[in-house]
Amino acid sequence: MTAVVPTPSKCGIIYPSSDKEPVAETYDHLYAILTTLEVLRQYLLNRQATVLANQFLYYVEGFPKLRVAPDVMVIYDVEPGGRDNYKIWSEKQVPKVIFEITSKSTQDEDKSSKKNLYEALEVQEYWLFDPKGEWISQKLQGYRLKGDSYESITDNQSEPLQLRLAVEEKVIGFYRLDNGQKLLVPDELAQALKEETLKRLEAERQAEQERQRAVKLESLLARYKERFGELPEE
Image (cartoon, rainbow, N blue to C red; front, side, top):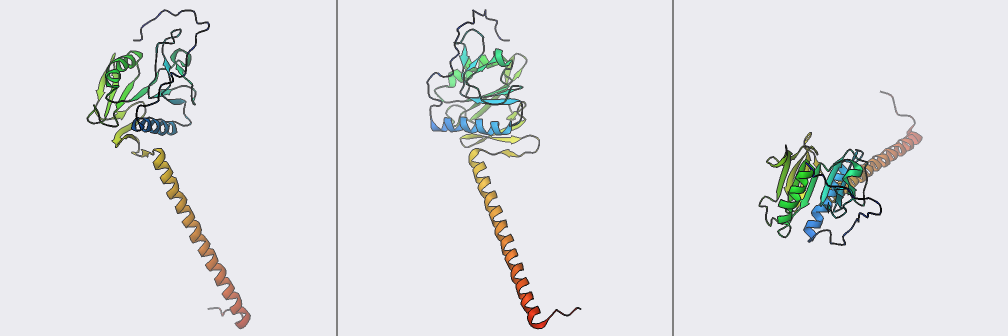
């Protein structure tokens, strides 16, 4: 569906990696972006995929002004790792899933021009998350490409990611479809690590107590043998 645009001479064309604009307009939006990025990055480790956030997506070679900066995009069948920007013609893959962390001030762009662009580029899924609930009452709205156009996702399940999405206050919660397991956000990972460390330390403490108890019993037995000889056999 992508419109065919004549490609000019490519010599000397610069594709910037930054527009010097802020990443997000509020802390809530920034936290939602970074949390989504890190959760999906961890989920896709060791796979031929990458997750990028707030980086330019160039979609027509030779036209550096034809670009967009999705808040989070997931691309499959590419080399893992970060990029300064993403050029579709170079990587030969269109993002499978794009997230926009939307707000009242960006809603017109997010639900019209960006939606139309992602639809034309054949991005399989497009998700809008409104952490403050400023214009999406349920905070989360997804669209899936069917034929040439997007249709609303009603079950909050992502087919490319094989995850169920849930609104959890001001972030998106992600749950595996195969086993229901939640993908932990960084704060939850830190808490889980802390709890696991405490369990390990407690297990080591108990093991040390058992070792000391065994040493004490052996010492008592040795003193008994010195005074009374070997213990009688039953």
